[in-house]
Image (tube, rainbow, N blue to C red):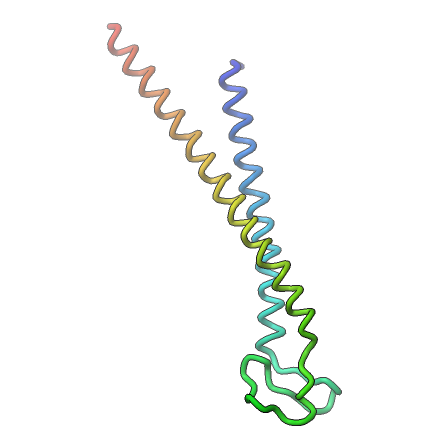
Length: 122
């Protein structure tokens, strides 16, 4: 195998690895976003007997037992974890996809340049 083929193979492997890590980060981020959405959109009960409306859909002045909301630090922590994970996942996936497309484009250019050179020498 030539040095150029080895370099191309290594470049494609790094691009595929970047896409895989980006997709994995996006799956984790999706899970975190869904958990946050669940905490915000699903009704809950603090004492187990009195149901409270979901935080997104409750009245501005909730009933007495529902004055205490869910722990805000848990939802803020989910947001703090999901946002950078989403950004990193998108960045890794896009970088891997662009690298893979660039490698494919360069292979096509080299093929057509070699084809034109061999046709021109006839």
